[in-house]
Length: 203
Image 1 (spheres, rainbow, N blue to C red):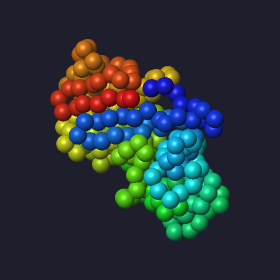
Image 2: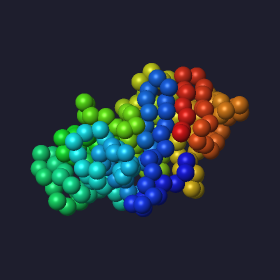
Image 3: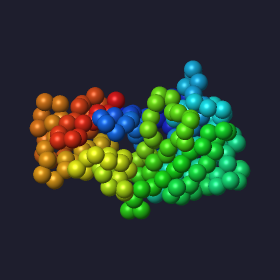
């Protein structure tokens, strides 16, 4: 996946992982992700349809923690905040009239997940934003970062230097485009990965 600039003048949406039958997920690998209202000029990294500021809050990755830094009105655990705080598993917070839920499915991994509470939606449509640590687990376990309820297998995405790679499940080869892979291989944008019940692509 391409690296994402955190510069305010060169922001772009994170790449999106599409998992057939499961959903779509923003893969946030920058140390800073700006949350804000969906606008034509696309100021925020993660854009939300709702009544909130164009620049509402920043989430910063610091070590294994995600730090929520308010820019406009932010309410966490029922209290307005005016300084950065560490987000904890299942924390809920509001940006304007928009409610979000932060979770860290596995205490052994720094990768975490951010979801919108209906009726609000991401723009473009997403099921969740994934704040990447060193790995991302896709599978049926409750500790998976992307929960794939109908899968029988688990797929691991992991950092390898400056790249992201895919580790196929034990005993199952994956087709990476027109190549069959049984060992880890690079995750490339636009390359369809399929095998068994698994079908995914990053765009």
